[in-house]
Image 1 (spheres, helix red, strand yellow):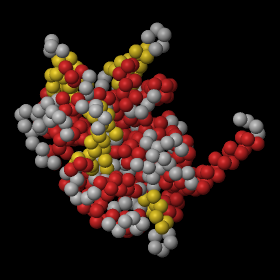
Image 2 (image 1 turned 120 degrees about the vertical axis):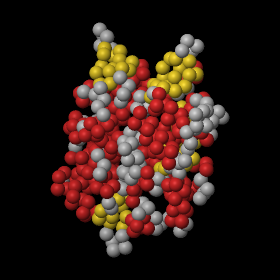
Image 3 (image 1 turned 90 degrees about the vertical axis):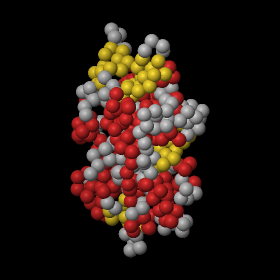
Image 4 (image 1 turned 60 degrees about the vertical axis):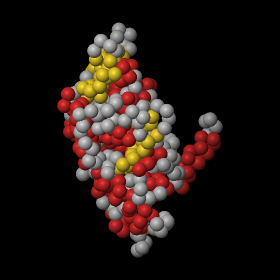
Length: 421
């Protein structure tokens, strides 16, 4: 069963890929709660951070300085997750992270919803998202389950907005009834899959099925190494949520994409079980990139992570001081000076993330050599796009249905009639 904390974080990342729409207005408090969780996951284990470092982490998390100072930070302080230190003028100097363990973070979702003052519509949307992730539901059944607690109007509105951002899909069955399901889970399953893909090319089932089998055998498979099908079917599978794609962007502007399947852990947004922050996938993609595409290859990603977990630190080169922002802004590592010759080392902050990533790398048959290779390969990596945002980016714009369009027109005409320009 998914927790509300995971739904909030995933929903926030998903919505960030779309242009602002009526769905954003309707689900705004949920997106805000997800942004609070986003920053909390990144600050976990970081102890004291300067205001400058906090701002850099927030920007990487798609949170602007104004929102950070006026909304996110006060909410984190209200939750007791950070403690700000300010100078005599009230300017933030640093924060002390008091982030609880992951289990407590997840359990705090109910309190979070109260703090952000989630409306009945927003709570109905969370319940619908969770219910249709667990199993496909006939429309009236799903509506009834939500209406009991939040009312029929809130339930219908929640369906409309989740459909517009492609977190719900409606499919008409052969008997005329409508089925609601989460397309990121159920597109490839049974009758729902056949109904959802009926209008697609007749080759879709064969091509996507072969791709899923290939990716399931090697989680984190570089997209450039796919042999089972053509690139257009990879794009189709990603857009349907059958295959998940994360992206590592290099300092030269190039991108390398890595593929996962829901079999690694099925949930509403494709986040692996035990990886609510998505940072395990980020680290896996980073390591595979360094071993596969970099000019100075990391010979043994597993060996590097094993050393980092065992010793808590790794590396001793000057470039670490400036070339490793992706993993540092994620809160996975921090960079510290080492020695007297201008060297720097990576210090592991979130060992659970590294351990989970090592398990995935081991499942791919990666060896742990004593000489893992050059750390310069990781330094090429500048930014990361989480799978929730990457999948939503394929749509980029939420659809405006007839009801929403009519409401917008009515609002505009009402303003014009009153000459309140």
